[in-house]
Length: 132
Image (cartoon, rainbow, N blue to C red; front, side, top):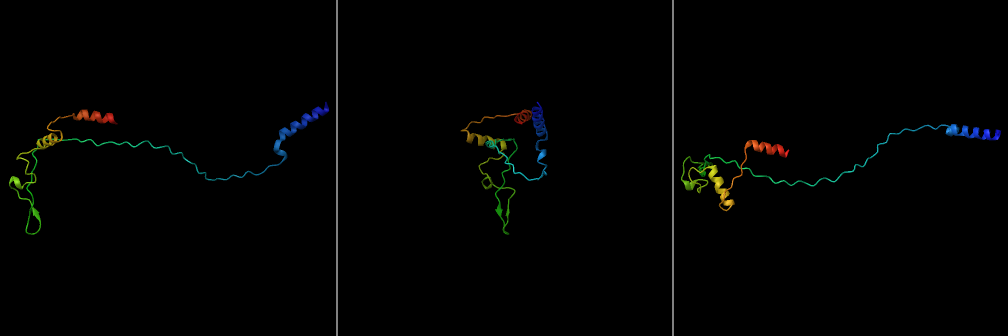
């Protein structure tokens, strides 16, 4: 029985003392920068947007200026009055407006047909807010 108690006591002392029988060794603390590899996710595909065309058309008269005339000193000057054939756009009739020009361009683009799609300023603001 004494041998059994002695064995248990020896195991208990060895277990509780653990590594203290070997002594202590100093702990070395070092600060070392560690390079971290950051996983870069694949970027989303590029969005390809097309730019819409907006037309602002009024009934204001277009100024069809006279072609510049060279002067004796080498400069050019535009006369105040000139014949229709001497203007920048001789094919535009007198009193030609931005509305007339727009309608002519639309007829040329669309084979003679003109169709309008319009919106109010308030509706445009709603459309803009929806896009956000």
